[in-house]
Length: 204
Image (cartoon, rainbow, N blue to C red; front, side, top):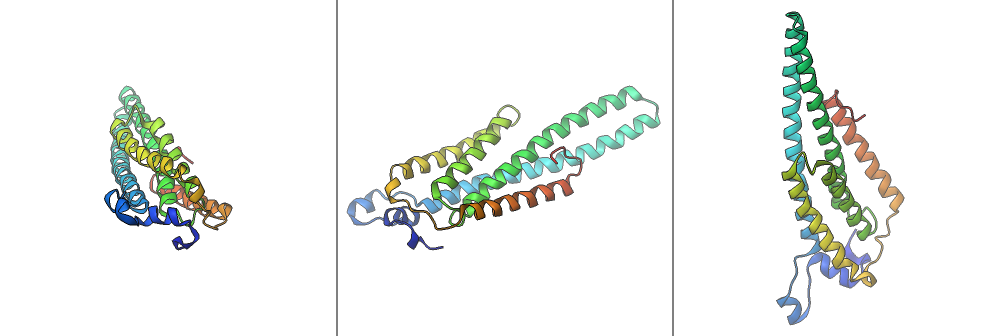
């Protein structure tokens, strides 16, 4: 959907168009590009999550083989130690899966910002998803928490900026309930794909 349905002030911010000498001297980065930057940062973290989940899957497979070997040697004490390690691996992997689903949802909302309904609602929804993930991983994955903190700051900046121009915002004329249904369907598909790839996950 084109920017024709938006107020002129918002269209200028979205496309980065500024009129007059003052606008040319103080031209801000277009909202469209800033949202693109936020999406790319999220995608980097998603790639890191995928890589780490693959490592956990390989590690778990190796440990399961060692448990079998321990039982074959009647070494139940070693088998219990390995089983505890697998439990910890699965806990961490389940945390990553939960984070991945939340980040996927945030990125999807930002990618489909024109189709998802009101601009501010989409930004706030994506920001809350980022905050939720950060609260889960703040201790276990500090580097990811830091990177997602940058994304949250970017979204906060855009929300604050657009909040000052509320009078210039118009709804995108898309049924919000329908958009949310599409997002929920995409989330379910993503979750199903993860369960197929990692059948031992507890996130069912």
